[in-house]
Image (cartoon, rainbow, N blue to C red; front, top):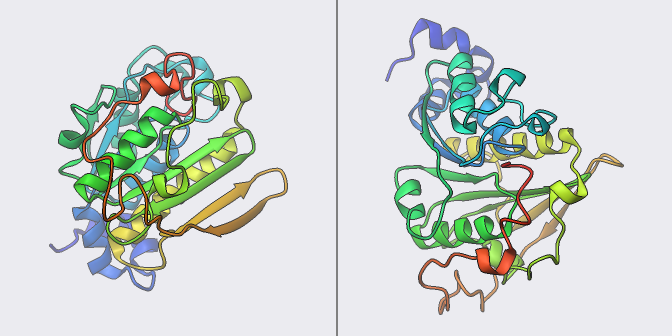
Length: 274
């Protein structure tokens, strides 16, 4: 479709980029991205996706805005405290860019609803930081063959990897099983520097845009690790596990499972969603 004069003006700094142009911007405007979690990761990620002109953004979150969220969750404001995060996020994204259709899912994902939620999107961004959701999202995306951008944050550190089912390793190739309850402290217990969430959320948006544009090298088979204390980035190769329980040629996980019983979700809630 032809870009309007207003769109040409709005996206002009992006359109002039090599490998974008009018055709690339048209791809972005027609794209559909699902962002799971409207918190520390999902907030900056969705904000930059809307700014770039992504045509449809799905926001998944079951929580309401709390005052302690505002140190890092930049789509929410003090006036939003007490309202559902997806509604607060939608309001801010629509104010930033009316071109973007924002669809809200005020729910907690589980094995019974996730495949229906992800089915209409081109790529999924996982902004959760609790193990039940991470494993559920990974398994669902592998089964449904949906590209997935994973990220995790804790204190001064973050990591990110893009998962291309059928081509590269998945999250379970790196961490085959969820840890037992209480083995890993939550952000609520250990803390998180707000800027770390911003860095990783923006990197997730960058991965999603590269996938949409089919430009650049995705973080498939590579885990990018960021440390804010010394401002360092390093990349670790992640091989595809031939015995992976979900993405190998002979998977043992062939149907979706809910992992709350393994990870004590109610006691170890994710600070990037909450």
